[in-house]
Image (tube, rainbow, N blue to C red; front, side, top):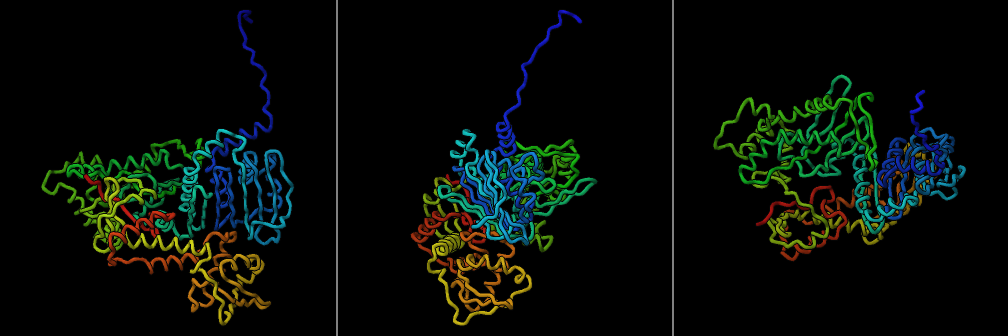
Length: 602
């Protein structure tokens, strides 16, 4: 051996303390507050839940989630909190949360009588015990987290400084879940200082879920299938008029898992749409008009073999995807959207423009785009309906598309009423922007939230009426099999105005019901409530149940100001000021917009 050879002796590496190792592992697995909600929500959906309720208080690091899933058996529940023995994603998430905060868990399996409980923290894991006074009223699992990230002061300070934005990110996670699993009821509410609530009710399809969340938009079905890959979804048509000014309405799922909306797939789809609609936008600029938006709406589900891609978690706990061959994926996506672009003759790809240059003519204007669009929309009856919706949204030759303006509730207090137009719309001015309000939609939203407040505070609309003649209801076999559950929900039903007795023969005698229902309906409202409870155990008293919400939505609509009702300037001003005090002022009770920016004023 050469004596001149030198060696570097590294100091011996000491093993991290177990507590430090657990903290690093857990804070990597759950790196943010929304990431914690995402993990818990995945557990609930994986457990077969049809209803999930979530309460968040980011400033205090509090998350409360309850579901009506299958619950955990005593063997699996016993492994929670023991890292060396866990064997499921559910226990992985709960173990990590226990390292980052304090966790109380209650669970009850379907068909079992008792609610099991367990408390977890960084230093202590209790044995499984029977809960004497459970917060979980049905079967499923409830998780109560406090002091999340208390051991990580930098993240704790971040929670306190960005609480409203964190709630928005949590809402985005729930939107992804609703579109991916439209058959699950989701409810979110935040602490008083943020003052935010959000609710999604079951839909039969992703299209229905999208409509409930974001209102009516023109969307086409898309599908591509090849060896080893299947892509299906809905997307904006290849028409510049249908594009948005924001990527807010873009969702992608890989093998059923929602992935980040800022990923490479989204960027490629946006680039693709910008290329193919660039022709229409150029025509608009030639006419001194504001160019169209460049972001399509889409919800895509990509199913392919696990060997050609991998999931990666970003530092925001967002799931991103990496493909072995991105070029192949881009080819698939091009083929997926080709039918949309070919439906409209005015939208040509760049290669087509090179091969066949367009001749200049008097009709080489935005009007020509409208002619072709109108021709394509006349082809089928379904497309005629789409054209009517486009006109209703303001997409006509006179008004192209709402301008890119961000509005909040405080802005509504500063608008100045110009005039009522056609006894339908209220034109207003905000700084240098012209904003149009739908008088019926605005008043409908005001009335809905008044009814909601009346119900929660037990005012006039929610008086309880004792029936002059009790209603006898013969329970179905499904309900009789859940008589124990029905007995557990007696206080819940009483809270909402229904009192009853059940005899040994399975007959239910209803003696009171809320006045919000017509007495002539007899037992129908109660049976709706029973169906809701049996399909959504774990429901909370502070959330208005769907059967009652449907009634107040209908009352809000029928009693609201109608199209054709004349209003004075003062009445218009009062209407908008009342709207500004609503919790959700920008959509009516059915999800349609209450106002839309029209143009900028010089």
